[in-house]
Length: 214
Image (cartoon, rainbow, N blue to C red; front, side, top):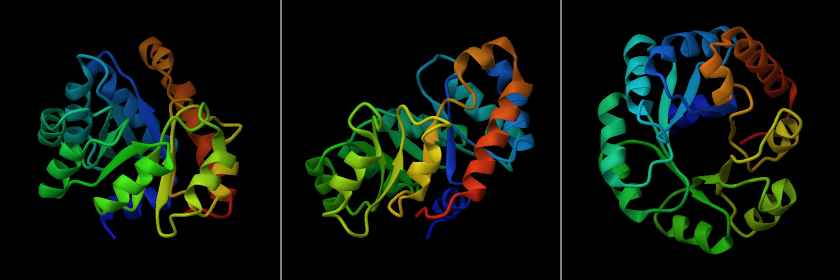
């Protein structure tokens, strides 16, 4: 098992971060660590995302930081150079998967149909992002499409919230859950890092007291 996957199994939650201002990366990282969740998936959706990732990777080695919304091998390479320890993509791109595997970077592409799971399985992947989790049917849908694929595990992301976290974590096919509810972009932009810390603490407590998981 890779060190990254082992850490995700232990933490069970992946905060999805959309950040505009890299200058807020340090305070954000401190809030995540103080809340008990030293992990961040920085979505490459803003011009400042890569720099924010770079700063967290360089200044907070205790934080498991990765890149999300990775659409191309070039983006994966840029994120890797910035210090990303894992790559997440919204869909299944064989080119992104090939780049990551060639460079020893764990990659979790997004899937939401049996066909996509099967395609990822053929590529040798066994841990996949289930996206968008809630809009496509939530936990009941995930349980249904996961059943024919023993040995494949999932990281549900997309609409997962404080209210649905425990139910997802109780499913044995789930390694961890991703979500932005702990640190939404508006809170980051407002500098409301104490609020982020408190939300992270609450999520960590749910994960700690919930049985199941991958």
